[in-house]
Image 1 (cartoon, rainbow, N blue to C red):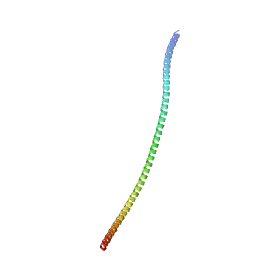
Image 2 (image 1 turned 120 degrees about the vertical axis):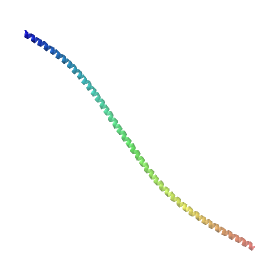
Image 3 (image 1 turned 180 degrees about the horizontal axis):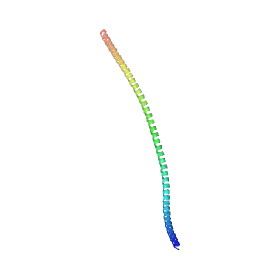
Image 4 (image 1 turned 135 degrees about the horizontal axis):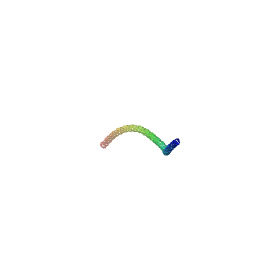
Length: 153
């Protein structure tokens, strides 16, 4: 009977331990369930953040591509404007050269014309002087003839 009592005490003690262990298991299971729920929520947030990051990465890539296109277009426009400006500069330099050549030709032409006109003017003056001299001679001769006729008659 003593042995039975001890065994009963042992069984009761083991049952209390079992209940205690069962209670601890339930608590651990609740903690594990909460942690699993927390892990699940974290995984959902991680997936959402991953999708958001992917979306932002795509937007960033599109923005970078757009910026590259705009830079390339700006560079092409700048190159085009530079070429046009260089072409215009060359045209203006060519025109300036032609104008200088034409100006030099006009100056030479003017100088030649001035020399010709000076020569012709001098020629005309000489001829006028000769003509006046001839005119005076003739007037003198006419005067002589008049006086001679007057004297004769």
